[in-house]
Length: 462
Image 1 (cartoon, one colour):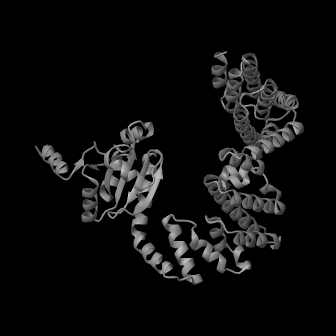
Image 2 (image 1 turned 45 degrees about the vertical axis):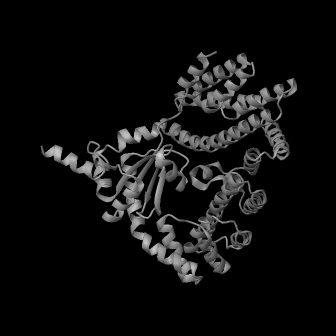
Image 3 (image 1 turned 90 degrees about the horizontal axis):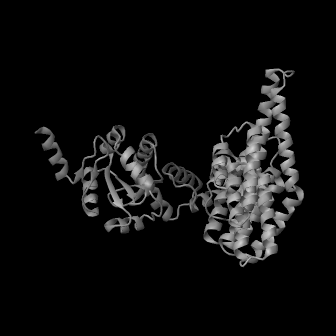
């Protein structure tokens, strides 16, 4: 009887019970806002669609967890909306939701305080909730500082406080950061407390970027740690700004940013092309400028510029690293190394030392070649589409290119799509030979990444 009464109680409140998990409010959006205001709690919204598999997984496996329910039920009014039905359409549009699942944390007035995209583990979901609660507590202070900023206060101490609070809230960059940096003397740009704001830049300002780059250029080489921090911050800002220019088709701005990247390369050659830094969060600014340009030109159909750059960049790389030479060298390296490991005349300690050093070297070269191969493969696909109907001569060149992409990075993630493309072109024998070659190569290597299964599965189709 008691259980029935509890169920009735939740139903009257407009909340559905999911076994020990999150309790979701079932009223309208207006009713939800009233409930949120009455309880003085923010709203947690799960924005899903009926066809989204990760959404279903979250709903079934994460929202039903007791620890998740305990945390969210005590702090939020929880709500679920289908972004393609009823009120969900308007709500998803209001918060610019375009991918699923997206989860939002908002106030009763509908102000966004936090959000995240994609399925989460129970632990990560609770951490997102903790972040939202922190932002909910910060919101009154943020609104107070917003009002002061809008009234025109640009005092350095105020801007430092304002930018710090916005950063706590998750709002990095924006005009306040540029305003703060613009007030600083050049020598202060390399100070630790200001370097982070350079890394947070989200509004392109040529004059400001020039000042930051010039400061790096004239810094005393004895301050290596400071110089490295400033270099990293500028490259981080360039990544953000380049991504914005690419997304928004801002050609003039894009060209200026590429010029700034060239200035950074003149200071440190590692800024020209450093895939390790790119993979560690440094972003697109550490990718070769040709690859960044190819991405921009292809996305926005600058076809003449794209074709000219692609052919020049590809031909230069193929001339520097002939396909057969790449194959022969990697074959010889792996056979020599395999024989070394089998040797009875070399101590195990020496083998381990060589293995550590070789592993680091292979990591750097492997990431470089994989990024280059993927970039050129994607660009070649675009070039092929641009030049339809394809001539027999172009097809012959294209097949040569595909072989080169495989030679650059002999691994399943490259070989399988390349072999599929060869098969689509009617070159089934070459596709099969490529996968057989990779299978033999991985066997000699010892298949450290456990790729042989995937390769053999792809090979079986031929």
